Image 1 (cartoon, each protein chain N blue to C red):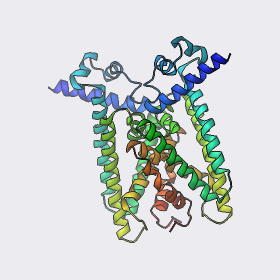
Image 2: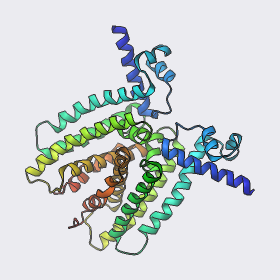
Image 3: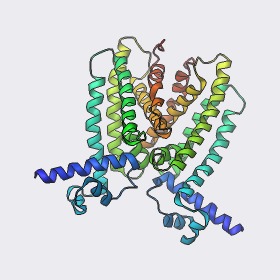
Image 4: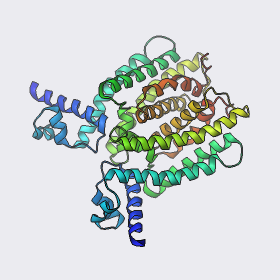
Length: 200
Length: 200
C-alpha cells in the first residue's frame, strides 16, 4: 500500500516536472516512468489514460498553488498590497525555477491551456475551473479595495479577469525571453487596470 | 518547378492549420503530408527537419499578420483609434476562426511560445523577433499618442510590451473559454495601461 501510493506520487512528480519543461504531447508514458524510477508497466495501474495523468498533474499543481494564493490574497494587510505580494512571489518563483533548470518555465496552467484546451474537453474544463478559482480570489481582493475607495472599477469580476490575463501575458513573455524581470511591471499595470493611483 | 513549389506551399498551409489546432509536438510529418495531399516522402525534400517546418510556418504566418498590423497601425487616423482597430480586427479574426472550425484557435505565436520556446532555441529566437516587431509597431503608435498628449506613460517600449502582453493574456482566455468576446475588454485595458482617459 505504502509502496504503490509512493509510485503514483513519483509518477506525478516526474510528469509535472517534464510537462513543465516540454509540454504534454511531446512526452511518452515510458519516459515519465523512467524519470520517476518506476516500472514502465505500472503507469496504467495508476492512470487509466495519459489524459487522466494530465488531470491529476493539474489537480496536484493547483492544490499547491491555491494554498499559496490563498495565504497571500486572503492574508492580512491592505488589499492592494496583497496583490503586489502575489506578483512578487510569482516573479520569485519563476526566478527560482530559472536558477534550478536554466529557463523560466512559465505557468503550467497557461502552458497547457494553449497546448491542450482545444484537444481535450476534460482538460479544458479543469483549466477553466482553476482559472475561475484564481479570478474568484483576485475578485475578493478587488472588491475589498473598491469598497475602501482605493480603486475605481466597473465590474469587479471583469477587472479581476484582466489582472489574471495581464499576469498570464507577462509570464508568457518572461518565458519567451527567459527573463523573470519581465514581471516587474505587473504591479504598475494592475494598478492602472484597476484605476488606482499609480505609485510615485 | 511549378509543381514542387506548389507542394511546399501545400505542406506549409496544412502544417499551419494543424499546428493551430493541435500544436506542434502532437503532429507527425506523415499526417501533415496526408492533409496536404502530397507524397509522404516529399516532406524532407522541402524541409530538412520538422523544426525547419515550424520556422517556415512562423515566417509565413508573420508575413500575413505583419501586413495586417502594419495596415492598421501605420494607417491614417488618430493613433489610439488605430490600436482600437487592431483589437477589433483581432476579435473578428478569432470569431471567424471559431465559426469555421468550432473553437477559438488563439494566437499561433503565443501557442508556440508556451509549447516550444524552452525546447528549441531557433524557435525561441524566431518568436522573440516576431514579438519584438509587434512591440515595435505598437510602440510607434504609443509614442505618437504620447507626443499628442493623449496618454501619460513612462517608457513607451515598456508600455507597448504591456499592451501586447494584455493582448496575449486575453487571447489565452478567449481560447480557454472558447469565447472571442473575452477580447472586448482589450480597448479599455489598453487605455488604462497607457494612462489615457477611459471612454465614457
